Image (cartoon, rainbow, N blue to C red; front, side, top):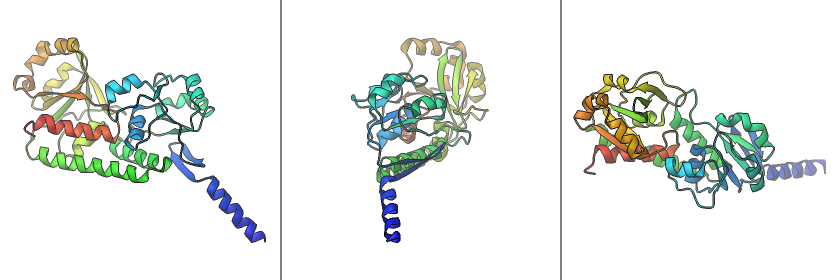
Amino acid sequence: MKYLLLCLLALITQNTIALTITDQLGTHQFEQPPQRVITLDWALTETALSLGIEPLGVADAQGYQEWVSFPVLPNSSVDVGARSEPNLELISQLKPDVILISPYLLPALDKLQKIAPTLVFGIYEGNKQPIANAQQVTLAFGQLFDRQAQAQAVIEQTSQILSQNGARLSATVNAPLLFLRVLSPQTLRIHGQGAMVNDTIERMGLKNSWQEKTNVWGFSTAEVAQVAAHQSAKAMLFGPLKASEKEAFFASPLWQAMAFTRTDNVYELPAIWTFGGLISAQRFSDQLLKLLLPED
């Protein structure tokens, strides 16, 4: 009789705690996959959407639509405030089952945990391997939301796209690439080690001209003059860039004097979130192919 009771208790416990999820802070138990999901980081929003999970609430929805754009954010997702300072009262009113944040929102963790279980996942970390980290986050979300097959499919699709695009580009593109975002007419953000774009092109067999020290996000902030040592590269400019900003930057005598400008080796990329996940890496890879092999 005692044995039967122990077995019954074990069965009840197993059914009650159906999911054990590991994030950056440890392990967490859920009775069932969360249905009401709030994401407070765009890369995590992108990852959830890639698995078919439509967040109940997201941070800075308008910004996501402008800078990330894909996967498309459904109109039903509520904007819950800034990524750095979300609206806790509104989040509480939405009654989420789980809140997903990056480590950069850890100062708000205690307040968020009072509202709902809060999980912490980072893609841009000290190991400077964003794609590998994004793969791990995708797998964790697959487990959390019972979308393991979808998670594996996204990972395999990403590897296939990077491999196929890389095979075509590496056979014809010999020059190194230089990835820039305009901050002002005099200042640039240049992506290097630890950046999604750098990790992506390495997996594609391409070379990044910028090998300087970068921060945890994988970029350096530099003056335009510092690009002079990289004039043999193909310059890739990330959008979105307002017409007035583009005009002011391109009019710079220093920029006009660069070899890549004079030889028409400057390319403009559309809005792709350079701090995104696997879908951003796919889109970036596809856009490189489109720009550098325009006949395709």
